[in-house]
Length: 261
Image (tube, rainbow, N blue to C red):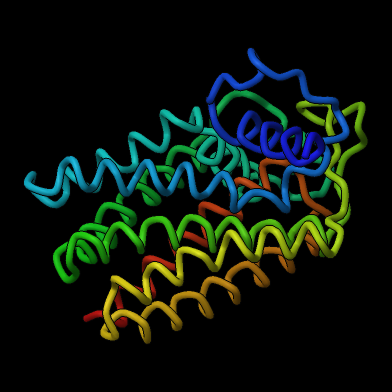
């Protein structure tokens, strides 16, 4: 139970701004294994979006969508968006492995990062906003939690498929993630599929086929991204993890929107 408490605390401290570290001091080895538990954090971040959707359902749909995204950014400190921007700068402006890693480590944002964030938020507002107009409130809430947890679960496989591209000494946070063990992947899978059960219960049959198509598409997106990372830098970084989640989730909503049309 103590080990489980440490792992849960490490996961929430790492992926959100919840100040649990003020209450519990977690040994470093638990932070090295946070990635396969990413879907647990998805329940918190996706749940925050869902509750925001509930509280702002009467507002114009684009405003509701924007507020949902803002609340999640505040909860995570923009962790994933920051990684995505660095990923865009590195892979957009770097011509060699060394140059890509150097650019991603730079704390300044470049043109590719700015454009990537503009396109990302525009796409999210458009796709999620459309989904909100085509579904009921509880369906939309379940979809937000499901999209978050599934995208985080898929993104966690990056650690399983690729080696870390830097050394621990040159890593931004001086931390190298450990390759997930089978039982850790099973825990992540459990927390990823639980929202699907809620969706099946409250979402109605009309969203199950689009949801399945979106999940398959998001999986293919994750595989494509990891293949690109292997080719370009022969590994991954923390920025790559955040970018994989951002892109995979955006692809999920895009396919969901297309199949609901």
